[in-house]
Length: 264
Image 1 (cartoon, one colour):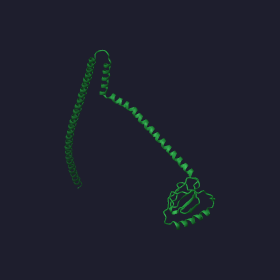
Image 2: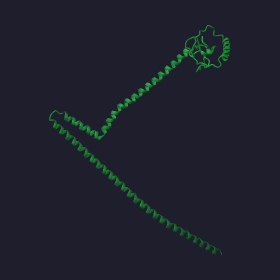
Image 3: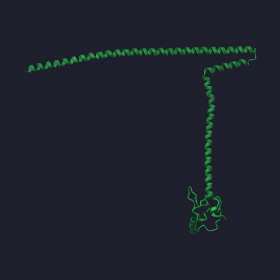
Image 4: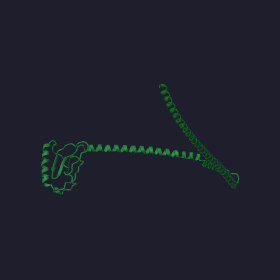
């Protein structure tokens, strides 16, 4: 058997328990003695990593690291330290715990997949509705455009001419050219009439604006003249009021003088 310091950190020893697990005092004593022995013999040695065996029996792992228990507290077991290794009873609930964790993970994955599938289904339905509605909207836009309506009508009439079997090809082409020319002339005349109506409307609006501006300017001038006249009248009335007050004072003084003379 090699020396303890030369053991590989990947080595794992499986030991079957042939003693009773109820001897807690013996286990504690062995742990204390082994700890003292280890501190004397292996104080300067590097401690290997921790490893756990999934099988039944005992688990052998190093001293340097302790297993961190998440969630519930682990079952307290007797620990025996020998030659730099901790020999610990296997966790009986390990398989059950691992099974529960795997089951919980599977449930969460199933929920995520279900939610993702439902979201994708809703998006596909919305996209399909958009794709279904877009041709209708495009058709409505085409029907609203007068140019598109005119071209569709011309194309339909031209196809009716070409499907006829009587007459030479030249006659059909002449009819087609005449049809296109008549439609184009009609469109141009309509555009000219619309432009003329638009220009007339713009000129009417311009005339109305000019007339309104002229009326507003005239009303403003009238208001200013009235304001000036009123201010002049107010000034005259103030002068007359001052004169009336002075006359009233003179009459009061005369009345007082006459009253004093009569008393004497």
